[in-house]
Image (cartoon, rainbow, N blue to C red):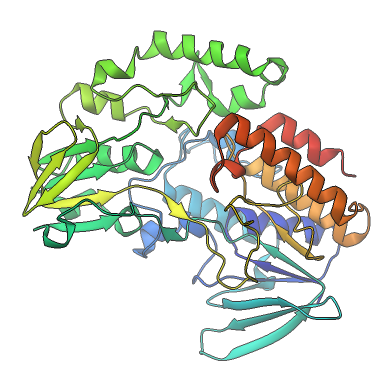
Length: 430
């Protein structure tokens, strides 16, 4: 068979649609019992980065696949179950189901001396199977391994409550009447803190370093609409920063007024946190901001300002480490941890290996994965050609240099892309 697609979430289904449109033989391997990725996990009660309070942060019109809009009856920002149902409906509508093998886990992906790829998978019956492919597309997402502080605060081994990661968080009702400290100020941290504040006896948000918190809409426009607008892409970075900073000053004031640390960097020099709710919950006294955790003793949590809170649980919302245990070592991450892919898709030293969805835009990712999928399908079909590995490495080095200058060097920073310029890049490749 020509192509193996790994993962049947938003990205994997987009890849399948593009391959099918070109008549390219393929199969999709998905370890879960159904399509939908992280969007189906909360309702299924499975461990994963999804939780029952999860909603889209991007508008439904731009999150939907091209040609398959979401229902008019859905709100602008649908909940996880709506998104899971939409992805199931899309798989049926696009005729993809027959090529998806559910409950099939990929164990290893290795390139043979003749250039083919050997994919070892394990089916629902526990039987291992090895198949040969010309191409492999990894579309399984990157929220895999929980990233906990290293080291954890002193006294953590004797803490009297529970210590867990966002990966283990499911529902705020599980913490009825408890005192909970949420660590972090990223998307999952503010979602979980807001959710907990409706059930827990006391909810504390521990923030070590300030991030820019941006509402889902500015001037009546969703962030997706702004990021996709031609007038936005025509602005220089300093102009974009001035525009958003002024809008935030008018709409919410300074973060220091909420008891949160002010960011130590300009906006768009790091990932932003999108939330309409967390600042309101703080202003209503439902979420109590505190600085970073200094130490633990019994049930007492001491913060770096010497304040102390009694807690029954600590939820670390401190992100994830990227891991693809079925792939060869060093792929797609380079020695410094940055993702090293040509146009954020192609592994230059491994012909026939591609990644779709391994990007982090401000706004919806759907248009990007559709463009990536179409480009991969063109490459597989011979309608687009890749440059030499040397040229691809030069492009990667230039991209990482620009990213390091703007965001610093890290695994997460290397995933950042700007929507319109990135779509233009992909369009230039055939």
